[in-house]
Amino acid sequence: MAQVSGFSTRPIEEDYEIRWDKKLGAGVNGEVVLCISKKTGEKYALKCLRAKDRAKREIQLQKQCSEHPNVVKVQDIFDNTFKRPTDAKESRYFLVVLEFMSGGELFTRIKAKRFFNEKEAAGIIRMAAGAVGHLHKFDIAHRDLKPENLLYSSTAEDAPLKLADFGFAKLDRGDLVTPVYTPYYVPQEILAAQRVQQDKKAGLLPKSAVFAYDKSCDMWSLGVILYIMLCGYPPFASEVRETNLSDRMKKKIAKGEFTFHEKYWAKVSDQAKEVVQALLNANPSQRITAAQLLLHPWVLHGEGASEESLESIQNMQPDQQSAESTAAMAHYKDQMMKMRRPDKPVGRVNASAGREELMRRRKEKLAAKAQGEGAPTSRFANKVRSKRASLSNVVVPDAPQARGVTRGTQALEKLLAMCASGSVGAGDIATQANSTLSQMNADLKYVQKAIQTSVGRADGAINAAALHQMLSRLVIPTEAADGAPLAAPSQGAPSAPVPVIKVQETSNTSQIL
Image (cartoon, rainbow, N blue to C red; front, side):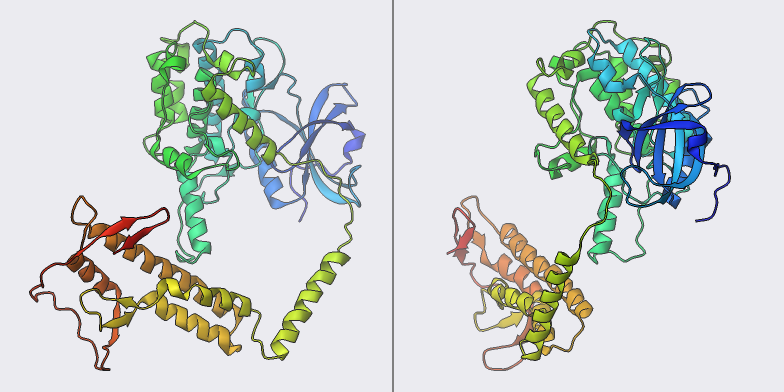
């Protein structure tokens, strides 16, 4: 990478004393340690970033916005090649000297209070919205708005709150497609972008498919922060501790479904609830903007804000938490710990053991192929063969002599032939395998839907004629029992008396009797 304009190449040690043992935190792209100006003796935070384009973008965007009173200020930027205490060799780094934020994180400050009311919450949102609004004026989306990135400049009661860590920040030119987020603060449009990327990788969508979101994602995250400040627990939480985002949680986020529990929201004003609802609007185009939020009476001058201490203080204390907040905040802490990068010394790794294992596997595959046991896909082929019974030829109920195949079984036969040939490339086999799984799943879902749709009475009886008609659409006719080609079912033919097929429920599935 070429020299970056505005980045000093002089050694940072000439101007600052770096305290590598005084770690202040870790951002998205690098660690933060203490440094002290040799000229003034003033403390600063030093962020060390590997010299990459992403790091350059982060620094330039924060520098562009750092003159705002609610954004952490960039003091100096260095482009140096040196070796940190944990490095095995010298590397090129971008070293960002930042304003030292001695007041700590937002929620840490709130938890330390004995009294916290709506007016204080409104003041916090006013400062945070000011910072976000400043970014949005430059069409910059922060994309990682959370309490850990909202820091107080000092421990003074009137200390300003400032926005930090621009590791995920990016210019919004209508091309924000990468799903970067922290689970509790992610809006539905970023989850939608993630689903599109997953479907493209699975081959369900063309590579050209694009789903873009915009900078309004920051306003949703701000709404989650406000919700927690007012009641002490998040509006959306996974009910599965091992999962960052459960399916149920994703559905609630997609619909914007959250609850103002009476027990914990009784002291909260209607104006505050109105702001929460405006921020947590699942439709980005209808979500309140930063400029609009700053003009809202509740945010602007605390109109209607209650001065009574909120339940959030008790819910945030470990010894006095409610059942709802205990579960939610415990899971929140657990997930935050999982997402923090562990401190690992950087050194050389002996990879000989892994290389030996890789070579052993390669030799086994080559030996198996030489003995005529087929390509390395033989084990996969055996697994596929073991599941053939689940999609055997479909028998049409009203015409037992008529048999046919489905698209799933056709794809399966083609896959087995490819695996057995030994001359087909692994890429083609993988593509056919994905196609086979998709077709088989589609067949099974269609059969299940057909059975459910043809239930004709409350006692579980199935309308056989209706089931026959639906399954006939699934089957690709081949030939009748006598070898003659099958004719397609006649849609206008009179139906025979409808037999009744009973469905008996078992512990695992339904059986047709």
